[in-house]
Image 1 (cartoon, rainbow, N blue to C red):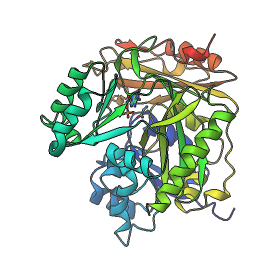
Image 2 (tube, rainbow, N blue to C red; image 1 turned 135 degrees about the horizontal axis):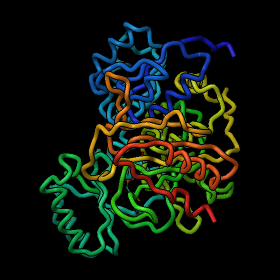
Image 3 (cartoon, rainbow, N blue to C red; image 1 turned 60 degrees about the vertical axis):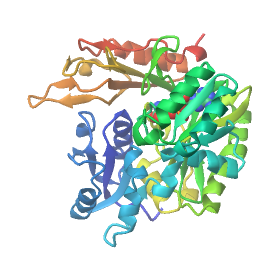
Length: 432
Ligand code: AMP
Ligand code: GLY
């Protein structure tokens, strides 16, 4: 293809997800300088970490012109929801830079639950039935949840750092929580509008779609493990591990997902005149074999990225550039037949308070797994210390989920730090 040129790339974000992106981008012969803002101790071995704030749009723009950036990839949702793409498209010097991530209108898929629910309703995309309440109709909301079948799902409309969903087991609790969210701003301005929805009973999975605004490619499916404890118990976390592919997402199920959800989503965006370029992360519930949308996100998942990206065999810069330039139909997506598993090492105490600064050792003993750093930091003397709740993701590829998990668990023993904790049962329902 005539597009194989070498370029400087700016990747935004600092988690395990971004280390996995950096890993794929750095492998490409089309990648000259890779900048990661702000990055972490892992990304610094693949590119140049630059201490920029992902919400400081003016400085990001200046960095791109000063450093001849030829491709921008946005990892986290917040800059997208706040309109980073709009900032770039409104500037003559920046608007021609290929950009992966939707504009403010497209990012509402994640930035407003009420907006995404009405999008699904408008385009007949299967999802839980719902009503939306604000200060204006809170009395009607109270009556609604008093008589709603149990459990009741309450969702803060706006971004709430993954904490804005409550599942209430009785009606009075739901009334109290609805009032706390709307009237007392339990999640700040994010919860002055609340979506109340039907509880869907089933098994969750994540489907990732890459779109250039017209064409789309379905990326590998993944399942993440959100609870802190083994057997899916205890508090919700950002994700303790993930596997890909998801065995029950077979061809028949994925056909339903594509026809009922992916195509109407892509067509719906076009009909609504939203030019969406980037990743769409669709959180799905498989209810007795039928897919329903739980949520959309305008980015890749973390830790799902750490199992999805290593299975993509294409030149990743070529894939990203084709997406940004509306040429996704030219790409023949190549997915590895191998299964991937990620085990996340965290700090004891996470997702509540946890210590930072534990010295980490054992990196050189890792065998046949990939390490994606999340909450780590390199001290001035070169030692790597823990710097977050989720510390490091250990990803392995193998001929089965069972063997991939086994490799990651074996390497989890090889990394040492005082407050290490991880789940040993990632992928348990797919391993006999
Ligand atoms: P969200 O922030 O929308 O991903 O919601 C967080 C989690 O709450 C999801 O991953 C599900 O486990 C759960 N959840 C959200 N909506 C529903 C629903 N309608 N029925 C059952 N569980 C849900
Ligand atoms: N792993 C779920 C998320 O990234 O939102």
